[in-house]
Amino acid sequence: MTLNRRNFLRSAGFLASGLALTGVACKSAGNKEAVTTPPVDSSAIIPAAAGVALASFGLQLYTLRDDLPKDPKGILKQVAGFGYKEIEGYEGDKGMFWGMGHTEFKKYMDELGLVMVSSHCDINKDFEKKAAQAGEIGMKYLISPWIGPQKKADDYKKFAETFNKRGEVCKKNGIRFAYHNHGYSFTEIEGQMPQDILMTNSDPSLVDFEMDIYWVVTAGGDPEAWFKKYPNRFSLCHVKDRTKGADPKDEDASCDLGAGSIDFSKVLNVAAANGMKHYIMEQEKYTNSTPLKSAEAGAAYLKKLLI
Image (tube, rainbow, N blue to C red; front, side, top):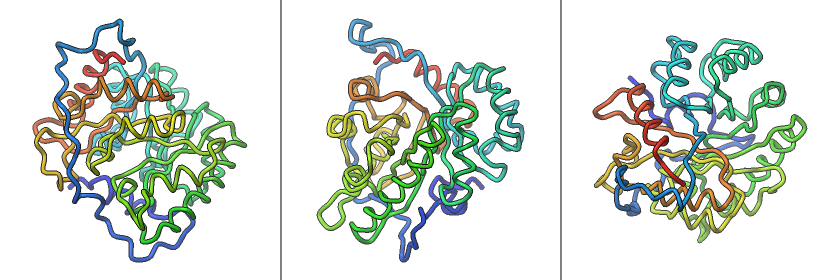
């Protein structure tokens, strides 16, 4: 049985960033209405005059979590064949490099024409070693994938301090540190939005952010407004669609890109205008498909998308 994203992160030990978390609930912002926009019609994508083709896009390997451990090299070869140019890793049982040394992994990526831009990882275990290895093979980011919903606003401030410290380690190794949001970052606590707290209390010279667009929408937020509010702070994004007509309380409603309710031709134009650098496809649920077929469909969609 496949673990969902949050359960995987919990089981992998990503719940804390050097802080003791007590009474953390797993449920994020499910009680707000999701923002729904007209579906993208691939036959009527915005004209070239309004943007340029999304020439380089990536895949979060968690999308292929059921397949990748069985045959890492074979699966990665298929990913390259779909047209992806970048990959974002995650830390599984075999580490970030799937049982290969970091330099061996880099060599194989070069053979496939892929670039490992970033990886989600446990930022509390051997982080200096991970940052050093990432820097040695030309990665750009190490990312905290989850901190969990907190009870107090001050708890988020403490996490921002931890992010600054991890950012210093990354800077020494020529890379960047970033944080990936879930819905809880966009649910008010003590009259404040956690995402605001994390962003205003972290040092822009040390900490970037990866917006998971799906989770912002699922929590009832407006991705475009956040891009405009914090220009050049969101360097990466997860391009993950939300099923049309999904119950606003349904947090597990991702679907194939282009088949859902998020107008990425519009959202990603705003992202690009405000400093977005890396567009990374991710999918967590497969209703009428398989992970590999969904990854292939995502690449086909992104090849046609103009931003």
